[in-house]
Length: 390
Image (cartoon, rainbow, N blue to C red; front, side, top):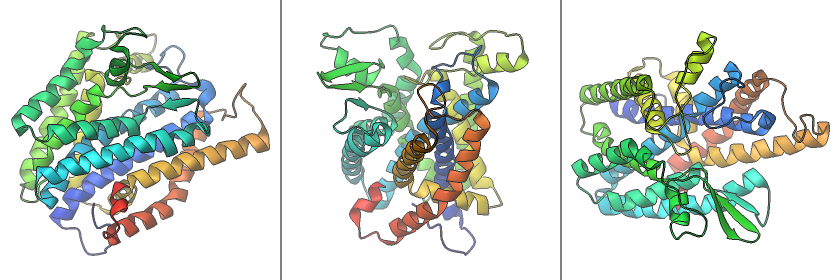
């Protein structure tokens, strides 16, 4: 999306776009940390929301950092779709791109992504996770972009704020609504055949609201937009979302398990910030999107650009990084099992969360050069159409 490999000082336009790639790059690294945890700390798997009494603070903090990933990914997908339309002149081009890329991501989830998690072929279980959710959200946005922007604002806000009202609604297996509701809102199992089950890990309805809001904030980042006005919108939007989170959380209701005072201040804070991701509650999205908007503001205003450029390398080739890191982690895990055996009951795992962080840091350094290479190829070879999907 941006030119990352030139040495001249950044212009305002490049700062505007580099901040998007940098934010995407930051949450990609949080995602890497979480996936290292899911690979080498699976013997200490956490629930959703987490069990405060049995989850150590370092594990809680590591998992909570990863909460930023999906909301920021989806919001920036909607924002990038708007900028794509600005560049290619029209909603028809946006709609077709969203439709084709959405189908591509859904296909990717069923094939390369699921195989990276399970190493089963043919698969017995297919997990419909974040790539699926982004793909389905893009398919929905392909139709929603034709709505007037004020109506799209309202639709996105109503979905994000109101979907928790549907939490009590469930449909049993055998009901005509079981399949569509499992896809839209009710996380669960879908029996596809005798030998294949699907797990709707990321119900897509709330994510459709998030991608719609991302598209709606697109004009803030338009080429002709005022930087001062954009930064004001980001500040008000981010601060407003965080204040809304605190206010609703203090009320102790609506879409979340209640928080309570524990024996220690740390556990009380953990309880307060212990929010539901599957599907993402209003409070989950208010907290994560509020932080995301403020980070976007900070990246654009930052005077030291070197570290932002480094983050933007990861953000410029997100799908390439996503596939690469999944397969690297799988190979590392299988190699560890072959060398050391299973040392944590049914798993090979680390003894401490510190090892998870160390592995994530080492992988960040190891993957930087191949990702930078691919991002440079992607930026240089615009004549290769399929590269834009990565």
